[in-house]
Length: 276
Image (cartoon, rainbow, N blue to C red; front, top):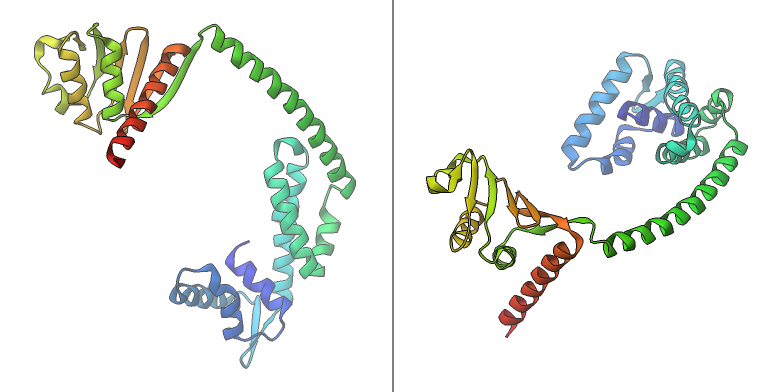
């Protein structure tokens, strides 16, 4: 609901409300009093100029035009949205629940709005009851599918299917990667010109960086020293995508899990060392 409609509803619910009481009811929506006062003054000025409210001394009252405007708001926005969402209710559960809560709250406060909703709604309580039944059936189905998916996950693990995991790209992770490579050749794709300028030219062939042996730790440390670098590392049987301080590993399940376990073990040992 827009601020103006919220103000209209408050004025309708509290005929003759004055500025200070109205301000007290909306102030909590704003970070500071100045913002609340500015928004309220602007809203009252606009509604007064359009004839939606009128003043009687310090009292604020809603006009027939204001009531009509609220009626149109209710019909054209809230109920029409609910009518639309209820055509495919299981696909729009979040919105349906949100709109029903708004409808029940407003309807309890304002009988005109409730009557307007009754006249224009294309759904009934029974439709919502049926929706609840469908949700329960869907939940049973999803539970069954969840059990089947869990079984397939375990089977794929046994088959050493492809897996992935996201870890922090830090010293602990790079140590594990260096150990895993064991001097075997790795390749990399890097487009960061600053990093490329620090790499010996003989490591680069046709835009691909290739290093092995004792050059691997030097290369990995070079990437680690540039945290904003984006890179893709091609290690034996796995790929590592580095971005925004994170390393995403792609490869066979057992290798990925081994790297994850070793990385966690390194972190635990490091924490224990500093605690001592």
